[in-house]
Length: 234
Image (tube, rainbow, N blue to C red):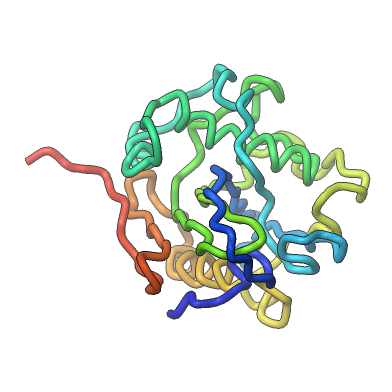
């Protein structure tokens, strides 16, 4: 699938090359009914970045995310994939920060608290699986090095009582089936993530922690895809 498109990071093209900012996204899958459903929300029309698009909750890594001690750590395979080909110095602290960013942004945008017994300031990261990574092409209004995590919504402690007032970055929050999203205005990278997730949901499961993660980015003028995986001992 071609990714030579502006939707990955907004519709305007800029000549100034921006360095991508680390960010994280959480794909929550709810499996308490006959058909799995995924949490999505519509971005406000006033946003410069992907206005009106339906997306997963997520956002930029904050420096404070790397200082949070988790109640439960990342699975070793998820930690290893996060550190693979990390820009700059690859450290477990930064990897955990990215996971915490996904959890924190989900809380801020949806009012859903990830972690059955964890407080908001001590997240349970054990249920997160790194599923995808994508870097926004040069020349866009915003550039992000985005990590896409997948998790079972059963890890949400307040799934039926979110503390969301409707005034956040994501509006009209909904749990949607893959058929429900067909006619929505989605970024192409979001469509790609859903297509990659479909075979797992069809089998009634989620990706394992050590599943290969798609890594997509521009090299020169071409959109390329590599794979992040866990090295297995011989």
